[in-house]
Image (cartoon, rainbow over all chains, first blue to last red; front, side, top):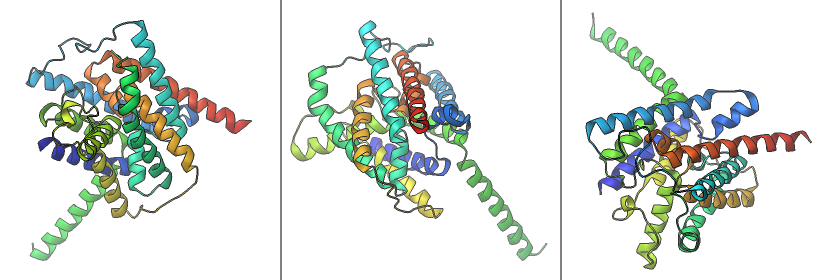
Length: 145
Length: 176
């Protein structure tokens, strides 16, 4: 039950802050390339830097695995095929998300503030989640890692 | 000092604090710091794990919730991560509700339909498939990179390349 409550509370806080700050994890790079605006890019940088520090602190407090090196254990891709799969999948992800106008998290925020296009986006999003886990994932297996 | 003056000062202080909090909430850097810290806390201590660095993800948590609902209503056995298998992950509902509350509170809520809904639907489907393939939405890819996940760092580089390619494509298409 804790998992439902904590994830709901996190979602509420992130949704509130996301609406106020218009933060989008792909919008930063897009704005930088288009108009050299670094506002959102600094937000993405802060996200990366803070999570790096916070995970280091969490490892100090309780030794929850992941190793103590720069690279967490069990996260190295198994070979060139896995590396290529990750990079190609990620390029498709970045490309499609940029064309849709916002990252998936930002689309949830836009849906909450009444953007109809974001509702259509989320309809396709959740339909694809069920389709992917029902048919695509079993047939292609786990490529990544 | 009279009681009236004291409460007046208190109100002014509260107003100033409220204004400052509102300005902080509009900062993307504050968002990044708060969200990353909360995501790590939730992932490490509040049961949103395993997998590792799973505190916040709009794609995987959405997949877990959608599959959890299908599993419990249709009796299927779709894949759900260990974190969201027992009780469901409600992050995505919180996201929409939190954004709705913020928009209502600040008078920014309004249904806006600028068209292109079929296209957005297809983009949504593509983004979900790609995100589940690489193991996270862009936000979680950033958090995974912070965790020290080499696959996450590779995915972050790929996403960045995809964003730059798409942005240059859009600019090229707009200038033709």
